[in-house]
Length: 177
Ligand code: IMP
Image (cartoon, rainbow, N blue to C red; front, side):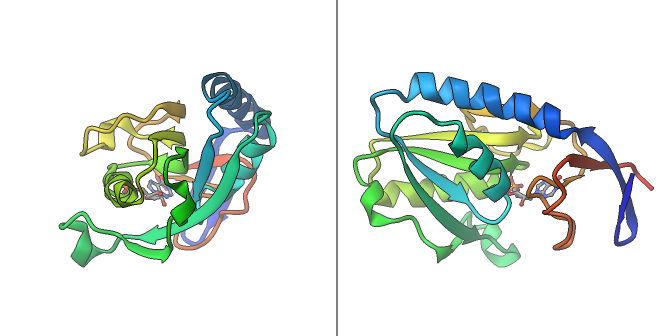
């Protein structure tokens, strides 16, 4: 158990559980993307831990870049995002794999995907460590999902609670107290 600010969190996935999930996702990507020279775009900040674990297991030649987009209340309704670190122009004509930590309502991913189209990639796939299907407001195909979870709040392995806890190596879940 771990207390972060005012909330208690308990373990949901151990380091070993996480490692098994990442092994499975990497194996699928190595098989599906062979010969496609994929270009991994990592969504900062949350996906950084997952991405470095995943990319170490990718055995085919690939590109890697980090992107950072923020969506905030006023713009959320319009489905727009602001680029803090934009998509690099050289994704044009490439097979992009977007690496995300979690897809919750899907708003961030939906807005990011429409932004991506301006860069004219050949194809776009999504790999997300976690997904909350019950929370999803936008029908989105997430090609590779590490684990589906319920409508609960998780922390660690890159995910934060109010700016804290990204560094926790396990995945923890808020226990309601
Ligand atoms: P969406 O736009 O609702 O899909 O939200 C996606 C973003 O919300 C993720 O990239 C996370 O930064 C954040 N998020 C959603 N659920 C959680 C959670 O359970 N813990 C921590 N961050 C979360």
